[in-house]
Length: 399
Image 1 (cartoon, rainbow, N blue to C red):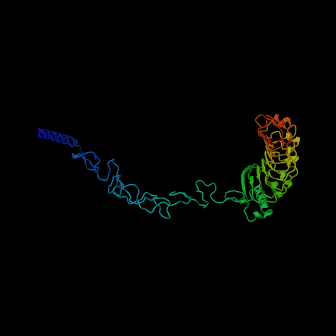
Image 2 (cartoon, rainbow, N blue to C red):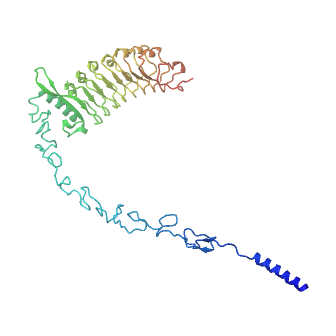
Image 3 (cartoon, rainbow, N blue to C red):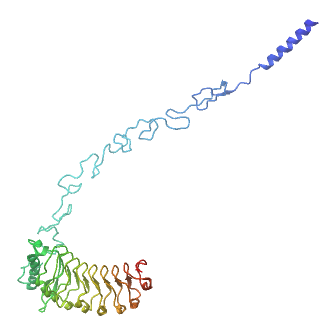
């Protein structure tokens, strides 16, 4: 009996051990760790492994160099690095300016890719003729030949135009009086403008109407300046002029005069008031201590600029300038303005900034509504900051 019980016990114990060591179920999948779908849990390979194409990874990225055909691992060659494969490139190299592959461009001595040359007028492949070799084609040249001393094409100089001779002699006088101009042809002195004018005999003559001699280190103006009867504009700024001859007052047709930046000039010639046509006068950066009385008789004057002088007063006679539109007296030593300044009915611009003004006349607000008024950098207390003033400095007041 005991033997039977022992056998039964051993049988039960063996059965229990067999049950506890029974293997888990098999897992099928790709067991190749180089495959894109490798399954680390697979126990049995079911031949489902997939692999990337040559030169690509499992995400589809190219793992080698892309050639000029944009093929991954391709064999295309691009010798000239222009982004086009040599097997389809029309030019392995560079195009010249004529569009020739590896060409030499426009040849020396010609002006275009067709082998044309410049004509006498500088036109490539043209047929222009420049008989007088002045750089202007004859078909558009105002003078085929040469201008004489009076600017007449193929003319006879002064004999036919005595008035022109007078003007030319004046230019020569400028040269003779100012050594820095020596050796120059009068027609090359500064900038001139000439025009035909009818004289008393109804004959056309050439006269000087514009003369610009700025920055020429001129120290003297010849008395013959008075002979330039047709002169309308004279520019003499930035020179070393200290005086002006009285003959200057003969320039009855003068409309614009610029004498600015002649730092030692402090007086005008006698009878300056004769310049009745004068519209624009610039005496900036000269050495005037007062405004010459003759200026106030120039009733056609529209622009007066006397910036950076030594002016101390602006007289009441300024209202005689009935056509005055712009006046700039900044950077002077003015201490007051005339009480009647508001009578300048045509004034558009008044600048008296950077002076020594401590008061302003109430009449300043009688100027036209469109008049711009500058009074900056003076000694004006707040009581003079009138509504009509456009530009003033709140910190100008000296207590």
